[in-house]
Length: 498
Image 1: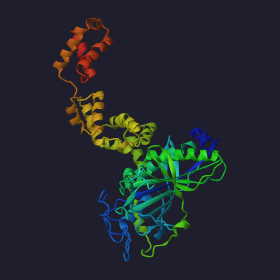
Image 2: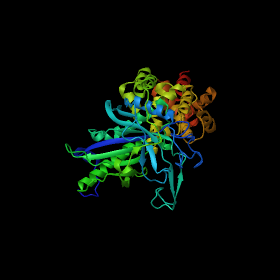
Image 3: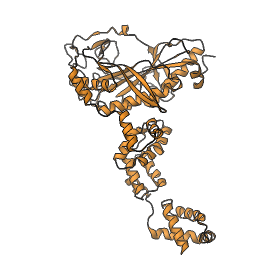
Image 4: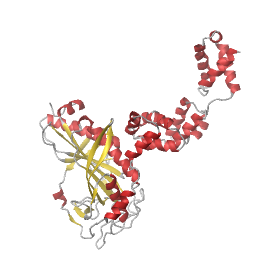
C-alpha cells in the first residue's frame, strides 16, 4: 500500500492492535498559586498576577500550597491510588519562553499518588483503566503567537507571553498503557476523560473547563501487529474537548497505519491536533526523562502526609459519579440502556440539574437527548456548550406542562434560547408564540373551517371522526400553529355533535 493512501478504520483495526495512554493535566481551583500568594483568577489582564516567586527572580523561595496538596490527595483517593507517606518535588529543566525559571517544579520518581484505576462503561461493559501516577506540579505561562494564519509560531511575526498562569497548581494524571481495546480505543479514551472530568468536578477541586484550558489531555497512541511488541507512540498535545480526544486517537491510528503500510517507521514525537480538520501535525521530537535532567528541588522540604490525615480525607470523599449514577438510575426508574444513552451523551449532570430546576426526569431526558443533542452534534460541540442552561430547559418544560406552549412551539422558543434572545418566557412573549387558549377565538376558527369544508363536516356528523384531521389542520393554519391540536379536536367534535 502506498504511503499516501489512507486506509479505512475497519481495515486498520482488522490488522493492527492499538495501545493508548492518556496524560491529563488539571488546574486546581485554589485561591492562590502553588508556591506563592498570587491570585489565580481566570481572565485577568496579562502579567498582573505575578510576583518574584512565580517569575523565578533571584533570591525568591517557594512555599508549597497545602490546599493543593490536599486536593491532589483527594484526587488520588478517588482514583483508588496509594498515597505516598514520603515524597519530594523535583526540578524539571527545559527552556520555553513561558517558563520564567527555565525549570518547572514537578514530581518525578516520587509522586504523591500511585497505582490506581478508574472504571468506565462502554455499551454495558466495564473497562478498567490503570492509573500509573497522580502528581503535583506548577503550570507554565501562556504564549500567544500573532501575525500568522494559524496561531502557531510558524509564520507568526511576534509572540507575546502572559505569566499569569505560571505557578498555578497543576495535577497530572497519567494512565498505564491500555492495550486490547481494538476498535473501541477512541471511544474508550473519550469515556475515560469524561469520567475523570466528572470525578474531579464532583470533588470540587477544579472547574475542569476544557475550553478554558483548566483541563487538557495529552493522548498517546501506538499500533502494533497482533502478538508483536508495542509500537512507537506519538503524543498528541493539549487536546481540549472530549470529542477531540476521540478524534485524535482515530486520526493517529489511521495515520500510523498509512505510514507502516508504506514501509515507514513511526517517530516518537509530540503532535498537534487541529480541530477544524481533525488532522494531527508534527511538533517536536519527544524528550526522555534524561533530557529533563531531573533532580530534587533544593528549596522545598519533602512531603510526608500523615496517614491519619489521609484517612480523614478518604472518609470525607463525596459520592463519586459511578455510585451517583446508580442511585439516579433507580430514582429515575431507568433501564441500563437509558442510563448508558445519557452517559454517552455526557448529559447526566445536565439532566440532574434540569430536574432540580423543576422538570420531570422524563421531560429533561427528552430535551437533552433529543433536540439539544441534535444541535450539539450538528455544531460539533459538547452538549454543555450548546447554548442552553438546565434552568432554561426546565422553564421551557414548565411552559409546555402548563399548556402555554405545544412541543412544536417550544422548539421555536428553544431556537431563541440558543440564539441568546433570553429566557423562554421572554422569547415566548417577544415572538408571540403562546398557545391560543381563547375558546371564543378557537370557536370562530372552527366555524370558519367547517364553512369552508362542508363535506368533511358531514362525514364527521356521520361518525367518521378520522376526517376531523382536515378541520384541525385548517384551524392550526389559521392560528399559525399556536392552538393545541388536542383541544381543537375536542372542540371540533363537540361542535359537530350538536
